[in-house]
Image (cartoon, rainbow, N blue to C red; front, side):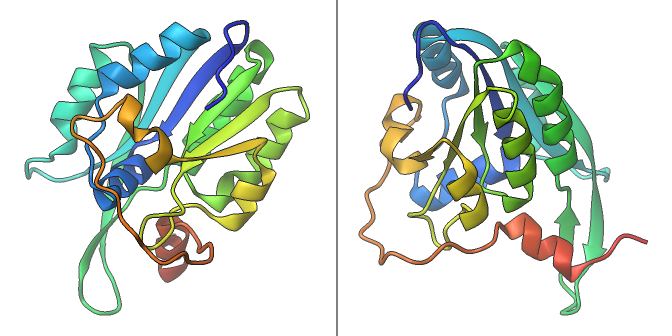
Length: 202
C-alpha cells in the first residue's frame, strides 16, 4: 500500500463497496487490525466510514458494525437508504455515498499528504483529480479479481496507485482470504453506477 511514516494520511471507506468485494473474495474485514495497520505505518489522521442504513423498522445487519466502529476510532458518515422496486419487481436498496465521500475528501485535502480510498466507483474520479491538484497523493483500494471486478477503469487510471484488495487482505482479515483462480475480466462500472442508471431521482 506504500504507506509512509512521514505522510499525513486519512482513510475513506465506502462500506458497501468494501463489504461486497470482501465477501466476493472470501474474507471478513477485521476493522481493528485495519486501523492498527494505518496507525503503525504513517501519520494517521482519521478513518472515515460511509454507510447507508435502510429506512425501515426491520433489523439491519449494518447497525452493529457501525455502532462498533463509532466506539473504536472511526468517523461514521451515515444516511438513510431508499427502498425501491426495480423493473423486474425486485426490492432494492439505493444508498450511494459518493457525494458524502467527495465532500470529506475535499475538506480534508489541505491537511493531508496521502488519501487512501476504499471504493471502486468511477464517479469519484473527478474528486480524486481535484485533490491530486492540491498535492495529495491518492491510493485506491478495490478489486479486479472479484466477479464482477469492483473497480471502474476511470478511477483506476486516475489514482496515483491502485492496490488490489486481495493482495493486502491478510493484513486485516478475520480468516484467510480464499485464493481464486478466476479468469481476468475487463473493468466494469461499479454496481452503484449501474443501480443509479436504473433509477432516477425525481
